[in-house]
Image (tube, rainbow, N blue to C red):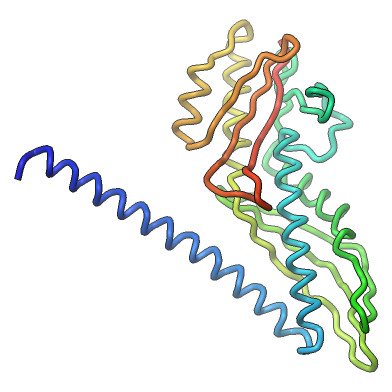
Length: 250
């Protein structure tokens, strides 16, 4: 066998191992999601399980929206205390580097911003179900950022009634795939580099980091500022790729 043929077989073998690993990973994720849904629904009377499934599905969409929104705003849900730039007139992007100062949110800060979003927007799931009476209380949410996912622990005591039958939605853990923490760490690295050299923008450093962490990066000179968009194309959230956008002001 020629050397070139051996190399091809080695490459094919590595690719097969990678593909098998990815399939096992995503099957594991889907399995955990199904197990959690089954755990919640089996605690409800059979008559209430369709409502429970609908509330769980809607809650997961809200969780996904929180990741997309917070990512598109550089790790923040509330931008009121962060300097930001109006980007093409349709959204604000925060300055995570502002004249030498870093405004990169910590992991714990992002977790809190995500939880605040979900708590503020879960009322989108509060709707009527014909023949049933539902009482919606305020939700309490805690969030945990992992490398490739976000976990939401949701305590939302929705009381479901029909005649003499009554039950309350149990506390649940929602898992949404997305490398928000990887992108946050990458942004922090780029801001730290900028603080080390306040006069120049190291585009090659940004590209090297994107290649190492496996995301796509776009750097745009906008109104004398730099807008960075870090995009994770490995998964989609509610049908959209995850983006982490922020700005540098010199």
